[in-house]
Length: 61
Image (cartoon, rainbow, N blue to C red):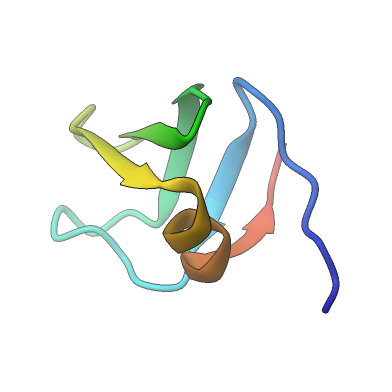
């Protein structure tokens, strides 16, 4: 399976949109878990790396 490349401070697009309506997230912490922040409403979520790679669609910036 193809491994998607992403780094700290990258803006990514997730498969599902956030309830605020935007689909852009900024990676603000990386480790075993990844914290991402919504570009629309600034809400942050921490999810396991494995789940993040499954739910990420593409890297935008």
